[in-house]
Each structure stands twice: as structure tokens, then as C-alpha cells.
Image (tube, rainbow over all chains, first blue to last red; front, top):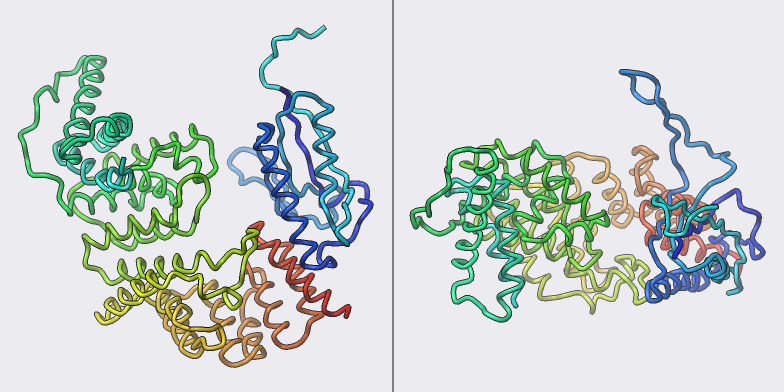
Length: 137
Length: 381
């Protein structure tokens, strides 16, 4: 098994095919979308491939160390940040193919007109903390 | 096995061990061990006297652990003998435990965790799941909390307000994982109310019961939020409402006003209305004014603006809102609602979308997005 991170972006991803902002959908379309996401996670829990999923607030703050005895420097939020992560799901699957398959399914969540959004999701493999049984060459 | 019974016995047993001279941290561990043993053994072999059984087993666990510690530290065997059979746990002991677990030296999250374990009898794993943190993290939080209060004298009650704040925090967490924290908070507050004579304890319990009574109506079958005005009032629990209202009336009759009684009074006015239209908003505004006198804070002022909008019309509500800091959580959502009531759908839709952007909860975000979508759809037709 290998773990993958599925990243959903508010901004920064290439435009989705069905790219209508959510507040322009009908309330029923929103409900259908939310239900799809919920069902997707439930299905992965059942198949034993779900690890974690969280949504992130759009606005955050940058923080950095400013030297001994000083409070950290903070800045932002920056509305113009190029790349903005909306949330993630972590899955634990047997292969990269399976991870791609699931990401594709998630990207097909219905949007305006009940049609799939085709939004871009970023798929990132985890670096495992401990070496696996197989050796590197 | 009756887990509720088992957990209701927990604080009394723990308090008794502490009174017999065990230090709090060690006694708490011993009681947890005894609970684990009870869960394992009772189904096959239920004891005739569950509390006596727990006291005996927990005390033995405590002695075993002390002996092990003593041997390790080469100290004298201070806990070598059986205690004199003293009186059983008393109500006062249990109360002191509440105060200890909500001690002001603890951070809110520590006080909550310690209360759930020591008073509530929940396992670390259950608490961790309820708060969606790893079990090891919760175990650390609890043991740090125990160290923090280990020097506190266990002989007199503290300020009941600190205990109420902790119980209210637990209640507001709602439910996730396999523990219903709202129900657990109600159970613990009931237990506290049974042993104290304080109108604010009754006020908090009434508030919890009245909110809990509406829980089934608060979400649709698909998990989405249903606003108060649109809830199916047939799904509210009338038994809990009646209990909450009676409790509140008894508390108010004592004429010692407090924050929780005022909040419960507002909840009771909502619960009393057969339909949303029949809500007595004028009286609700009066209770918000009372609440401001008792505890002035921006969240109360924001809620008051909503009530003013219902009692005196949306323009009055917007005027009340204009006096508040726009960065307050939910300020934008309230503004959207009042603009919609005022007939300005365009502004309302824009503000709903903006409020969704800032929503602190997913369900709330979905709800606000749906509100924006609803108005946008209406404007297109």
C-alpha cells in the first residue's frame, strides 16, 4: 500500500471544464455535489482506502521566525496568492494506477447543470517515513 | 452491561480514593484501570454492588501501582495497608472533582479532556476520537492536565462558573466519533445540578436541554443545515422542551439572574413558538438586552441585531449591525440575511457568497453557498 495526497485548489489549478462558480449553481446542484463528495469518502472508507480528508479555509497567514526573544513575523492574508489549497484527502491504495483512478472519480463530482466539473486535482505521493521492505537500487 | 451506570459511578469512586489519601493523578489512573476491568468482566459476572466493586478494585490497583513505584524509588511502603472502611463517596466529593477538573490553571482544552475522563469516565481513546486527534496526543494532554492540578488542594469547592464554562464547551462540540458529547455534557450537568443549588447550573442545564431538543430538526436527511425558521417543529423533542422550560422557570423564580438563564430564556421563547411566525421577537430582544447587561460581548450584540431585525424590521436590524465590527464571525452572514429580508436580493446574494468564503464550518459554508445560489437563481428568473 502507498499513500497519496489528493489536493483540491481554490486557485492555481488549470481551469475546470465545467467552470461555473458554485454560487451560480442551483441549490439542488450544490446538494448533489455535496452528496457526491460524501458518498465518495464513504465508499473509500468501505474499501479500506480512506485515511483522512479536511477542508481548509481560503485565508491564512504567513509566519516566520524573527530572531531570539522576538515574536514571529506575520503577514497576509494575501488575496493574490497564486496557488490556494482548498482541502485534501489522503488515501492509502495499492498502486499509482488506483490513486489516479480515484482522483479521476473525485474530479467527476457534479457541478452546474448536474454535469461533472472535471476539476484538476493534484496527486502527490507521500514519502514514507520508514524504509520499506524492498531495497532501492 | 450498563455503561451509563458504570460511568455515573466514576467520579464518586475517584473522589473517594482521593479522600483516602491517594494523589489525584494516581487515583485517576487506578479508576481507569478498574473501569477497563469492569467492562471486561461484568458482562459474564456482574457484581451485586457495582460501586463497592469499583472502589475495591480501583483501590487495589492504586496500591499495586504505589507499591511498584515505592519499590522502584526505594521509598518506604507508605500505602501498605488496607484503608479503614470509611464512609462511601459523597456528593461533595463528586463536586470537588468537577472543580478540580475545571481548575482555572488549566487551559480550556485540558479542562475539557480531564473532565471527560475523570468525571465522565470516558477512555482516552473515546475522547481522542471525539476531538479528532491521535490517542497519544490526547493521552499527553490529559497527563499534563493531571500534573497541573496535582498540587491543588482537594478540600473546598471553587467557582461554579468555571465548571459551567467547561461543560458548555463540551456541549458545543456536538458529536463526532462514537461519543455524543452534547449528550455527555447534559449527563454531567445533570449530575452537577443534582448536587448543587445554583440557579446558573439549572440555567445551563435548561439551555442544553432546549438546544438538544431541536437537534433532530436542525439537519436535513442529507446532512445540510436547516435554519431555525424552516425547521419542522414536529421533530423537536417536546419532552425535553417541557423539562428545560420547567427547570428555567424554577431558576428564574429565585431572582438571581445569570448569563445561562438569559440564554435559556431566549431558547425557551423559540421552543415555545408553534410556528416561526409566532415567535415573540420583542421579548427575545428584551432578553438580549438583559444578556448584554450581564455579559456584554460582540457575539451577543450580533445575535441581538438579528432579533432586532425580526422585531422591528430589517432596516432596524441593519442599523444595529452597522454599530458592530464587520470582521466579527458571521457578521457578513447576518448582513446577507437582513438585506434579503429588506428585498435587496443582489446585495444579499453577494454577501452570502462572501460569508460562505469565511464560514468556519463546512456545513455552514455549504448552507451559505446554497443561500447565495438560491437568490442568484431567483434573480435569473
